[in-house]
Image 1 (cartoon, rainbow, N blue to C red):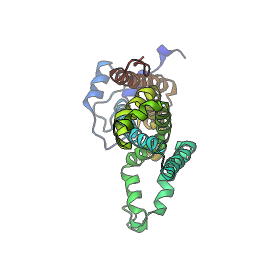
Image 2 (image 1 turned 30 degrees about the vertical axis):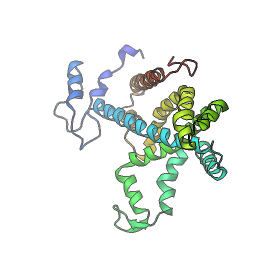
Image 3 (image 1 turned 60 degrees about the horizontal axis):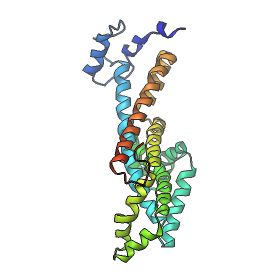
Image 4 (image 1 turned 30 degrees about the horizontal axis):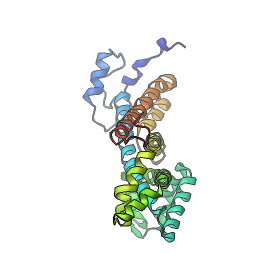
Amino acid sequence: MSVGSLNWTIFCAESNEYGVDKAAWAESVCRVIGSSSYNAHAEAPTWLQMLGSGVFTMVWTAIIAFLIAFLLGSLLGVIRTLPNKPLAFIGNCYVEIFRNIPLIVQLFFWAFVFPEFLPDSISAGSGDVVAGGWWKNLLNQQPAVVGVFALGLYTAARVSEHIRAGINTVSTGQKFAASAVGFTTAQSYRYVILPVAYRTVWPTITSEAMNVFKNSAVLYALSVLNFFAYTKTMREETSQDIIILILSTPVYLIITYSIKFVMAWIEKRMAVPGLGSGGK
């Protein structure tokens, strides 16, 4: 089958997502391309609209998960380099646990195992008092919240390793200089160590930002209706695998390269001669 003979108007066909308001932008696109399958009177929105909604969900979940991972990973990276051995041990345990367990397993843990250790509360579904009822309610009503939380914790372990490595590359002379001017440990990290460490490891942080976006596709396992979830549903409903994959691949490439350019711009803005790659 040639690419030219594929039925591209399938994206303008009625989806199976009822109860969702139809978006004008999707209808306009379908009219512009002259889709013969577009039905202005259909109750359900088109697949194009649902895929667009999935892209939006994928992007915002990835951004929030990365912010969680960056902040928590930075904290863990600092803790693991402190002379306080108990704190360093806690940080190392966190990293070894979260980094070495597959993300999909962690998602299922937070969804089905973690609630069993919480105090009893009322479940909105059954009305019964069950272990972790409020958490199960959150999972049922807002699964993206649990998914973002899990993805952020998973990625934080990886970010922590990069930050730790960056801190260890800071010369002892700079650390001693910070102490010599009277900086406390917290001030040394804030004004001397972390600024140098971030500049050094920013290219690897860029890779983690791109990984968070790609890993966000796995959140569909918690019923998060992201781009991957809708493409999977559309493939099952329409059997148009080739067309859907031809569309979805560029979407991932465009977003990942956008992340790369944004992170490179940030790297260039904070670049210091002799440190890092200068945003290249």
